[in-house]
Picture 1 (spheres, rainbow, N blue to C red):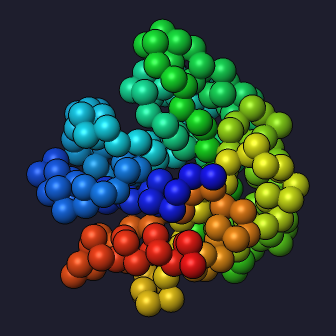
Picture 2: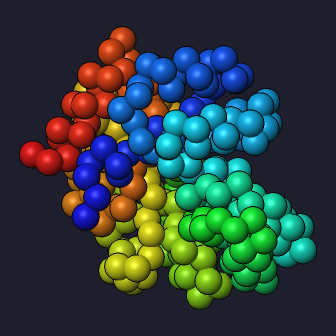
Length: 238
C-alpha cells in the first residue's frame, strides 16, 4: 500500500508555464501531479519535462474521445512521454478503447519507456443524475451507467477508471482489485465543494477502495498549500 502522500494527485490547473513552476515550488512535497487540457494546450509537452526533471509522477489528463484510429494515434504519441496515467472517455466505445490500449504499448516500446496506465472516464463528476437523464437523455440510473462504463473499459483492456468516490465501492466489488480507481470530486470536510456534484471525503474514498485521489483547490487555493496537503495526508492515516 502506497503512503498517503503518494496517493494524492494534485492538479496543475493553471494557465501558463510560469504559474505551473510557481505552484511546483510552493508544494515540493507533492510527488504526483495532474496535467490537464488548459496547461497542456498552453505549454505543450515542455511541462512534462519540468515534472520529470523534478522526479515527479505524472497524470496526463487529456480525456481523449474520438474515432478508433485517431484515439490510437493520440495514445501512441502520448505514451512516448513516459507519463504514469493517461485518460480517455469510455463513451468512445469498445473499438476505440481496444485500439487505445494497444497503442500505448506500441508508443511506450518505441520510446523505451514504461507504458502509462490508461484510465477511462465513466462520467464527469460535474454531472449528476438529472444531467444524465434530462440533458444527455441516458435512460439508465447513474450508478448503473458508471458501472457499465467501467466494465466496458476493463473488457477493452483499459487499466482503470476515473470515477466519483461515491461509485468506488460497487466498481471495486465488480471490477476487482487489479483495476485502478482514481477519484476526483474528493473534498475534506473543511473545504468547499465548488463545481463538483458527487463528492465525499478523502478518508471515505480510500476506505471505499479508491487507489488515488485527485484533490486540487482545497490544497492549491489554500492560504497555506503545504499545510493543507499535510492535513489531508494526516486524515488518511488516522
